[in-house]
Image (cartoon, rainbow, N blue to C red; front, top):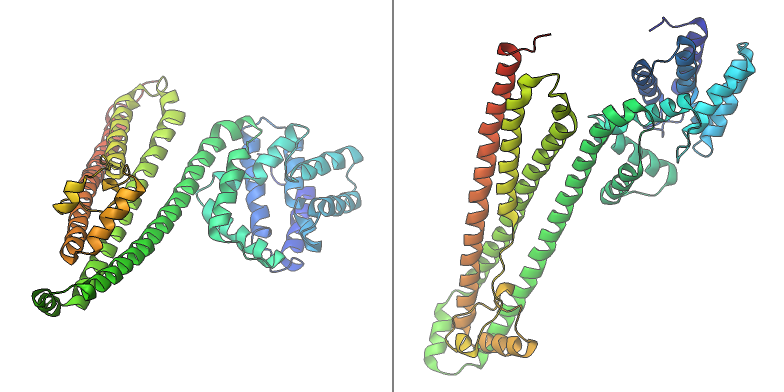
Length: 420
């Protein structure tokens, strides 16, 4: 790359003076750091686009000046940037034709992006280069805070993640470098966003289920207390006096709550395994497999890593895969106290009338009620045991398999190098 020209150096200094001295402190994202990153992205994409030194300099001038319009506020900042750029470049004696090229590049960054030529396409891809970087999450958070400060409206993280997901899905890069190099990285970041959304939704659903379970438990206990008062017989009264009601209620409540939280944790752990290994497989398929002709020594390590990821994903999916029973019970099951009406899997296929009759029977019999709650906790524990057993297998396969894959890559690279 040619050294920085006098014109480019003056543009650099002029843009940084505006962005560091005259920009409001509320611009947490659109500041001098963002502009410097866009300039570096222009250099990166420009190196792979066979640009002449003059065209690259034109692009770098546009990159330095594309956000100086934020000096006068957020509204129509692209137009303001173009006005500032024209005035500055005219003062520097730049020709009209070149000024128009710079202004076209700045105008193309207005959302939605609509570049009209190859230089504008590079400018657009450089402006959104951060979508494909490892630091996308930190930059996204700065932009969220900036918008909240400028609009006075707080944007929730859940709503922001949903908006980011839609933006990533609709956005596409224009240059060949953007499509082949940046797009796979952006897709990997999109999968991380989707995983974060799924994790938040899972946590929210688990919290709702826990609240619902506590309410149902309170209602069941109230019903049992009412039924117990109406029971006759000295023996029943003595048994009720002996039973530590408050301690029993606390035990059932805490145990059920713990089981719900453990189930949510297991689902989150499985989701992490699925997401991480899906990203690895997508990278292998989109990038590494296409290089087998150039690097045949990487075929075996790639197969090993792919198999490890697939086995890990299978066990993680099995850990979250639901198992629903027939969902029916008979009158004989109720009378014999063999069914648990507190679990949906035992009644989802029976009529409302039959279920109400069964629940009334259970509420009138404290032994039946406590027995149902005991069975419910027991089978929750069985399900949790299966979940965590499959999760342990998934994590073990991933841990040892990943180490084996990395070692195989090292052996392939150092002991079986590609011969030119």
